[in-house]
Image (cartoon, rainbow, N blue to C red):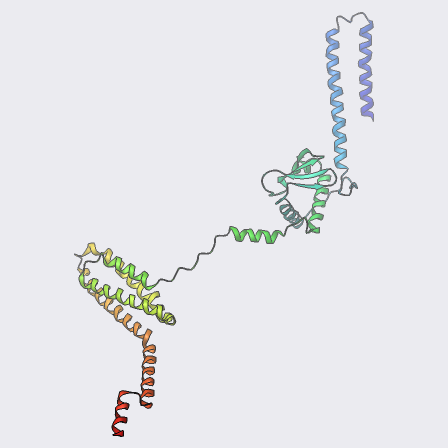
Length: 331
C-alpha cells in the first residue's frame, strides 16, 4: 500500500509544477519541458498498467485449476519419482500416437509440437486455444500450476481407461517385431541335378581326359540316383550324407583343382592329378553302392513275389512243365 501511496504523491507533485508553470505566464518557454513531461508520464502509466496485467495473469495461473473446475491450493510443491514420470511418459506416448492435443481442465490443453511425442519437452501449453508457452517454460514460470498438471497426468495414467490408452507394451512389441529383420530362411537342400550342373561346369575347364571321363560317369550316376529318388521317396534318408558331405567336398576339390591349372609345371601338380583320379573313382564306387542300397529291398521283394507266383502256378498245374507231366500221365 505504501508503494502505491508514494506513486500518488509523486504524481501530485508533478501536477503542482504544471499548474505553477501555466499560471506564471511562462508557458511558452516551458512548452518543450511540458512535452517531455507528458511523454514521461505516458510511459509511466503504460508500465504500471502492464505490471498490473502481468500480476493478474500470474495470480490466475498460480491459483491452479482442475478438470472439475475446482481450484487447487496455490503454493503446493509436489515431487514425483522416476517411476511416476515413467508412467506419465508411457501414458502420453500412447495418447499422442493418434492425437495432437490433451485437454486439462475446461480451458487448458497440452499440444504436441513436432511429429511424435518424445518427452514433456515435446508439449506446449494452450489456454482457450491461445498459445501460452512450452510446458518446460510453464514449469519454470508457474511451478505450482505445473505440479498440478503433472498430478493430473499421473492420475490419468493410473486410471488407464480403455478408451484413452493403447496397450503400449503390446503395441511397441508388435512394432519391434515388424521392424526387426526377418530371419533368414533355411537354405534349400541341393538336389542331384544341382550337383550335376556344378560338376559339368567345372569339367569343361579341366583338360585331363581321365578326370573328365570319371566326372562324366559321376554325372550319369547322379542322374540315375535322381530318377530312383523320384520313384522311391522313402530312400531320401540314404542320400543325406551324399548330398551333405560327399558331393560338396567333391565340388570344392574340383574348384581348387581348376584354380591350379595355371601351375601345371609345379612338381606337386602331377601327384595331385593322380589323387584326384582316385578320389573320383572312389566317389563313383560309393554312389554305385548307394544305388544298390536304394533298390536292394525292392529287388528282394520283387524276387520273392516272382517266386511266390511261380510256386502258385506250379501248384495249380498251370505251368508248361506241369501241363506236360499231366498229359504224359494220362497217356
